[in-house]
Length: 292
Image 1 (tube, helix red, strand yellow):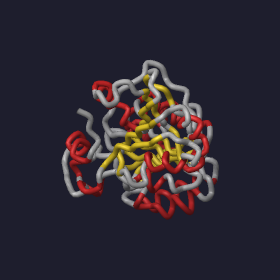
Image 2 (image 1 turned 30 degrees about the vertical axis):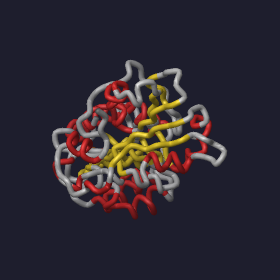
Image 3 (image 1 turned 60 degrees about the vertical axis):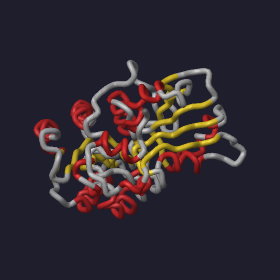
Image 4 (image 1 turned 120 degrees about the horizontal axis):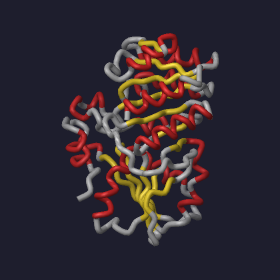
């Protein structure tokens, strides 16, 4: 997804002269094409994420749309105060691009595991979370946030480079995007790259007849849009590559009004495995995101 992201903003920057890319001393063999094509709209600030976020806010206050690119936890937890006070509070057009959602960098250990980032970013009242399932959703999210500048968080898997749908979905914040339709009153709702497990879900007798949706754009401001969809189903199962506490499933449960009887179950990571190191598939399976 990271290469697709860079190619997309290179293309969009041909027309949109306000696109600016910042990196924190990483992204080698990925970001060079943008840097070479638009050297006056690229800056490597070094290992200084807090300064990077402050600089991005300054540029955004002058009309630029700044993409701040780094590995998972570094542009989020390391500079949470700058995101809260500079970007979100002032509603600036800064897109925080997090590479390596979930256990994408599993073999680098806990410091690189992005399994608490939803919990942090969804607390920001003005933040739009973009969690694409595939390359098409990535493109559509980028186009949406460029058309509607605002504080945004783009969470990308490091290496998933496929399209799960033949047609690009029509997306907007809070809108569930249909992937598989059945006659069942039960549904699966994914966000981010967890939609890729649909084949295993369909084979699993427990979920074989479930509808499947993705929710690529969501956040604090879009809770009131969820009850209309929830009412259509008896049960909803959320799937996320994030700790269950404070994640996507928790967000959906907070959305539900008292008069909505839909049961919500969440599948995600168990916190007791935080100390384990391994590749993404191993850690997903070990931590609870596994479908036989």
